[in-house]
Length: 238
Image 1: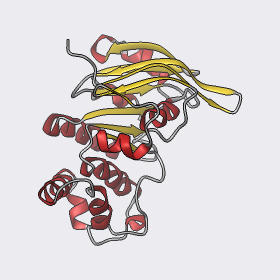
Image 2 (image 1 turned 180 degrees about the vertical axis):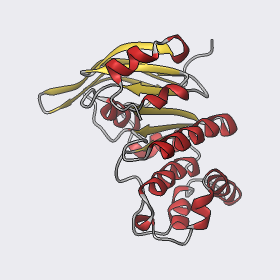
Image 3 (image 1 turned 60 degrees about the horizontal axis):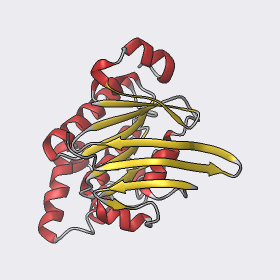
Image 4 (image 1 turned 180 degrees about the horizontal axis):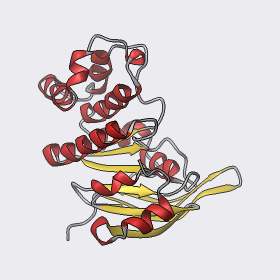
Protein backbone atom coordinates (compact mmCIF):
# COMPACT_ATOMS: atom_id res chain seq x y z
CA UNK A 1 0.00 0.00 0.00
CA UNK A 2 1.20 3.49 -0.83
CA UNK A 3 2.03 6.05 1.82
CA UNK A 4 -0.90 8.13 3.12
CA UNK A 5 -1.18 11.59 1.56
CA UNK A 6 -2.27 13.01 4.93
CA UNK A 7 -1.00 11.74 8.26
CA UNK A 8 -1.57 13.19 11.71
CA UNK A 9 0.26 12.01 14.82
CA UNK A 10 0.10 13.01 18.48
CA UNK A 11 -2.34 15.82 17.73
CA UNK A 12 -3.46 17.68 20.84
CA UNK A 13 -5.70 20.75 20.88
CA UNK A 14 -7.32 22.59 23.76
CA UNK A 15 -10.01 25.15 24.51
CA UNK A 16 -8.54 26.85 27.55
CA UNK A 17 -7.92 24.06 30.06
CA UNK A 18 -10.19 21.61 28.26
CA UNK A 19 -8.53 19.07 25.94
CA UNK A 20 -10.55 18.74 22.74
CA UNK A 21 -8.10 16.36 21.03
CA UNK A 22 -5.86 14.01 23.00
CA UNK A 23 -2.89 12.77 20.99
CA UNK A 24 -4.87 11.93 17.85
CA UNK A 25 -3.42 9.64 15.21
CA UNK A 26 -5.18 9.83 11.86
CA UNK A 27 -4.38 9.15 8.21
CA UNK A 28 -5.94 9.45 4.76
CA UNK A 29 -4.97 7.61 1.58
CA UNK A 30 -5.25 9.05 -1.92
CA UNK A 31 -8.73 9.01 -3.52
CA UNK A 32 -10.60 7.89 -0.41
CA UNK A 33 -13.74 9.07 1.30
CA UNK A 34 -12.98 8.95 5.01
CA UNK A 35 -15.73 9.48 7.57
CA UNK A 36 -15.12 10.78 11.07
CA UNK A 37 -18.06 9.75 13.24
CA UNK A 38 -18.86 10.50 16.84
CA UNK A 39 -21.34 12.23 19.13
CA UNK A 40 -21.58 15.98 19.62
CA UNK A 41 -18.50 17.26 21.43
CA UNK A 42 -16.34 14.34 20.31
CA UNK A 43 -13.82 16.66 18.62
CA UNK A 44 -14.76 16.11 14.97
CA UNK A 45 -14.87 19.79 14.01
CA UNK A 46 -11.73 20.53 16.02
CA UNK A 47 -9.85 17.80 14.16
CA UNK A 48 -10.80 19.18 10.74
CA UNK A 49 -10.02 22.76 11.78
CA UNK A 50 -6.65 21.67 13.18
CA UNK A 51 -5.72 19.98 9.91
CA UNK A 52 -6.84 23.02 7.88
CA UNK A 53 -4.97 25.45 10.16
CA UNK A 54 -7.90 27.44 11.55
CA UNK A 55 -7.47 25.85 14.99
CA UNK A 56 -4.24 26.27 16.95
CA UNK A 57 -2.81 22.97 18.12
CA UNK A 58 -0.88 22.44 21.33
CA UNK A 59 1.34 19.69 19.95
CA UNK A 60 1.55 17.04 17.27
CA UNK A 61 2.54 16.66 13.63
CA UNK A 62 0.56 17.00 10.39
CA UNK A 63 2.18 15.62 7.24
CA UNK A 64 0.50 16.42 3.92
CA UNK A 65 2.02 15.38 0.60
CA UNK A 66 5.40 14.97 2.25
CA UNK A 67 5.38 18.37 3.98
CA UNK A 68 5.23 19.01 7.72
CA UNK A 69 2.49 21.64 7.83
CA UNK A 70 1.41 21.95 11.46
CA UNK A 71 3.00 25.41 11.72
CA UNK A 72 1.88 26.60 8.29
CA UNK A 73 -0.81 29.32 7.99
CA UNK A 74 -4.19 28.50 6.46
CA UNK A 75 -3.40 30.05 3.06
CA UNK A 76 -0.20 28.07 2.60
CA UNK A 77 -2.04 24.83 3.42
CA UNK A 78 -4.79 25.87 1.01
CA UNK A 79 -2.23 26.48 -1.75
CA UNK A 80 -0.83 22.99 -1.19
CA UNK A 81 -4.30 21.48 -1.64
CA UNK A 82 -6.16 21.39 1.70
CA UNK A 83 -9.63 22.95 1.66
CA UNK A 84 -11.98 23.15 4.65
CA UNK A 85 -15.71 23.39 4.01
CA UNK A 86 -16.98 24.42 7.46
CA UNK A 87 -20.45 23.71 8.78
CA UNK A 88 -21.22 27.44 8.98
CA UNK A 89 -19.75 30.52 7.30
CA UNK A 90 -18.99 28.44 4.22
CA UNK A 91 -20.25 30.81 1.49
CA UNK A 92 -19.99 34.51 0.67
CA UNK A 93 -23.61 35.36 1.51
CA UNK A 94 -23.92 38.75 -0.21
CA UNK A 95 -22.31 37.66 -3.47
CA UNK A 96 -24.03 35.88 -6.35
CA UNK A 97 -23.52 32.17 -6.85
CA UNK A 98 -21.32 32.97 -9.85
CA UNK A 99 -19.15 35.39 -7.84
CA UNK A 100 -18.76 32.81 -5.05
CA UNK A 101 -17.30 30.36 -7.52
CA UNK A 102 -15.13 32.96 -9.25
CA UNK A 103 -13.53 33.90 -5.93
CA UNK A 104 -12.90 30.22 -5.21
CA UNK A 105 -10.83 29.65 -8.37
CA UNK A 106 -8.56 32.64 -7.78
CA UNK A 107 -5.44 30.48 -7.36
CA UNK A 108 -5.90 28.73 -10.74
CA UNK A 109 -4.98 29.94 -14.23
CA UNK A 110 -7.70 31.19 -16.60
CA UNK A 111 -8.24 27.93 -18.50
CA UNK A 112 -8.39 25.93 -15.29
CA UNK A 113 -10.81 28.42 -13.72
CA UNK A 114 -13.36 27.89 -16.47
CA UNK A 115 -12.96 24.11 -16.26
CA UNK A 116 -13.47 24.06 -12.47
CA UNK A 117 -16.55 26.29 -12.49
CA UNK A 118 -18.06 24.25 -15.33
CA UNK A 119 -17.43 21.11 -13.26
CA UNK A 120 -19.42 22.59 -10.37
CA UNK A 121 -22.34 23.48 -12.63
CA UNK A 122 -22.41 19.96 -14.10
CA UNK A 123 -22.48 18.40 -10.62
CA UNK A 124 -25.06 20.89 -9.33
CA UNK A 125 -27.23 22.07 -12.29
CA UNK A 126 -29.39 24.14 -9.93
CA UNK A 127 -26.39 26.38 -9.24
CA UNK A 128 -26.14 27.14 -12.96
CA UNK A 129 -29.84 28.02 -12.98
CA UNK A 130 -29.36 30.32 -10.01
CA UNK A 131 -25.90 31.59 -10.87
CA UNK A 132 -27.02 35.25 -10.73
CA UNK A 133 -28.90 34.82 -7.45
CA UNK A 134 -27.46 36.19 -4.19
CA UNK A 135 -26.13 33.28 -2.15
CA UNK A 136 -28.00 33.95 1.08
CA UNK A 137 -31.34 33.83 -0.77
CA UNK A 138 -30.77 30.19 -1.79
CA UNK A 139 -32.50 27.39 0.10
CA UNK A 140 -30.55 25.58 2.81
CA UNK A 141 -29.88 22.65 0.52
CA UNK A 142 -28.73 24.89 -2.30
CA UNK A 143 -26.40 26.78 0.03
CA UNK A 144 -24.89 23.44 1.06
CA UNK A 145 -24.38 22.59 -2.62
CA UNK A 146 -22.69 25.94 -3.14
CA UNK A 147 -20.41 25.36 -0.15
CA UNK A 148 -19.31 22.01 -1.61
CA UNK A 149 -19.05 23.66 -5.03
CA UNK A 150 -16.65 26.21 -3.58
CA UNK A 151 -14.53 23.31 -2.36
CA UNK A 152 -14.56 21.73 -5.81
CA UNK A 153 -13.74 25.04 -7.50
CA UNK A 154 -10.75 25.46 -5.20
CA UNK A 155 -9.20 22.43 -6.95
CA UNK A 156 -8.26 20.93 -3.58
CA UNK A 157 -6.43 17.64 -3.28
CA UNK A 158 -8.34 16.98 -0.06
CA UNK A 159 -11.70 18.49 0.87
CA UNK A 160 -12.39 18.54 4.62
CA UNK A 161 -16.17 18.81 5.01
CA UNK A 162 -17.72 19.42 8.42
CA UNK A 163 -21.16 17.86 9.02
CA UNK A 164 -22.54 18.36 5.48
CA UNK A 165 -25.90 16.70 6.25
CA UNK A 166 -26.85 19.04 9.12
CA UNK A 167 -30.20 20.73 8.44
CA UNK A 168 -30.94 18.84 5.23
CA UNK A 169 -34.03 16.75 4.48
CA UNK A 170 -33.35 13.00 4.06
CA UNK A 171 -33.70 13.08 0.25
CA UNK A 172 -31.22 15.96 0.02
CA UNK A 173 -28.78 14.10 2.28
CA UNK A 174 -28.91 11.10 -0.05
CA UNK A 175 -28.40 13.31 -3.11
CA UNK A 176 -25.51 15.21 -1.52
CA UNK A 177 -23.73 12.02 -0.47
CA UNK A 178 -24.19 10.53 -3.96
CA UNK A 179 -22.62 13.69 -5.38
CA UNK A 180 -19.65 13.47 -3.00
CA UNK A 181 -19.05 9.91 -4.19
CA UNK A 182 -19.23 11.09 -7.81
CA UNK A 183 -16.73 13.87 -7.06
CA UNK A 184 -14.30 11.31 -5.71
CA UNK A 185 -14.75 9.00 -8.70
CA UNK A 186 -14.70 11.67 -11.42
CA UNK A 187 -12.06 14.06 -10.10
CA UNK A 188 -10.01 11.84 -7.77
CA UNK A 189 -10.54 14.37 -5.02
CA UNK A 190 -9.99 12.86 -1.59
CA UNK A 191 -12.77 13.68 0.87
CA UNK A 192 -12.74 13.69 4.67
CA UNK A 193 -16.09 14.40 6.26
CA UNK A 194 -17.31 14.51 9.83
CA UNK A 195 -20.82 13.12 10.20
CA UNK A 196 -23.56 11.90 12.50
CA UNK A 197 -25.85 10.63 9.73
CA UNK A 198 -26.02 6.88 9.21
CA UNK A 199 -25.91 7.36 5.42
CA UNK A 200 -22.20 8.15 5.64
CA UNK A 201 -21.75 4.37 5.74
CA UNK A 202 -23.02 4.23 2.15
CA UNK A 203 -20.17 6.30 0.72
CA UNK A 204 -17.18 6.13 3.09
CA UNK A 205 -14.28 3.78 2.33
CA UNK A 206 -13.15 3.95 5.95
CA UNK A 207 -14.47 5.29 9.23
CA UNK A 208 -12.70 6.71 12.25
CA UNK A 209 -14.70 6.62 15.47
CA UNK A 210 -13.96 9.67 17.62
CA UNK A 211 -15.11 10.02 21.21
CA UNK A 212 -14.05 12.49 23.90
CA UNK A 213 -11.13 13.65 21.76
CA UNK A 214 -9.71 10.17 21.17
CA UNK A 215 -9.83 7.75 18.24
CA UNK A 216 -11.76 4.63 19.27
CA UNK A 217 -11.50 2.72 15.99
CA UNK A 218 -10.21 2.90 12.41
CA UNK A 219 -11.75 0.39 10.04
CA UNK A 220 -12.87 -0.17 6.47
CA UNK A 221 -16.59 0.44 6.27
CA UNK A 222 -17.23 -2.98 4.79
CA UNK A 223 -15.85 -4.60 7.96
CA UNK A 224 -18.05 -2.64 10.36
CA UNK A 225 -21.40 -3.59 11.86
CA UNK A 226 -23.86 -0.96 10.68
CA UNK A 227 -26.05 -1.36 13.77
CA UNK A 228 -23.14 -1.10 16.21
CA UNK A 229 -21.73 2.02 14.54
CA UNK A 230 -25.21 3.59 14.42
CA UNK A 231 -25.93 2.89 18.08
CA UNK A 232 -22.54 4.04 19.39
CA UNK A 233 -21.46 6.86 17.10
CA UNK A 234 -24.20 8.13 14.82
CA UNK A 235 -26.99 10.31 16.08
CA UNK A 236 -29.19 10.62 12.99
CA UNK A 237 -30.91 7.68 11.33
CA UNK A 238 -32.68 9.63 8.58
